[in-house]
Image 1 (tube, rainbow over the protein chains, first blue to last red):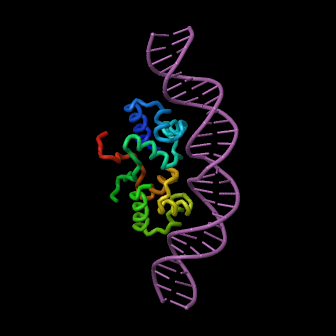
Image 2: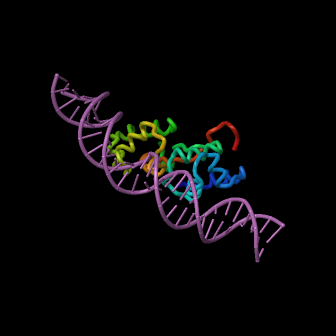
Image 3: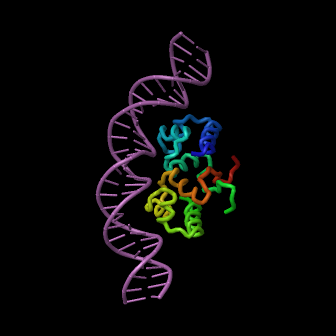
Length: 70
Length: 70
DNA sequence: TGTTATTATACCCGATAAGGTATAATATGT
DNA sequence: ACATATTATACCTTATCGGGTATAATAACA
């Protein structure tokens, strides 16, 4: 899992001053999901991740990851 | 699911002239997964999606989705 | 120190993602 | 028309994600 995602979630959650439980409730996911997300579990469902990211106006998109040209 | 992801997979696969099966084998996922991915299923596992995207040098990253500032 | 709030860990269980296979549909080419 | 290749759909099974709960650890604050 990308640190980028983990860090974003943690930081944005703090920005909005939300507890893990509050974020979970608002996003409509379980508390455990938020935990696993912030702890870097990488077998999470994409739609659930997006549900959480939507709370911050974000979503997962494909991006070039290597050096070479597309 | 974002059309962006679907379109990217389809186009990149064609660019490399791979069948769904070939892409599945190379990425280490099942053929059915490639199908569901290209058909817009949004409950897919993030790590599996990234396995496929890695074949093209891509990966899923969080991106701002709305108009407002972060 | 003690109390409360928040986060982490561990367990159980239902729902379903993912794989595999078979069949059908749709190209593609002759 | 007929093959062949590729993709789509349907069904079954296994593995596990995700939710929930309980408990433990940590943080924050007085």
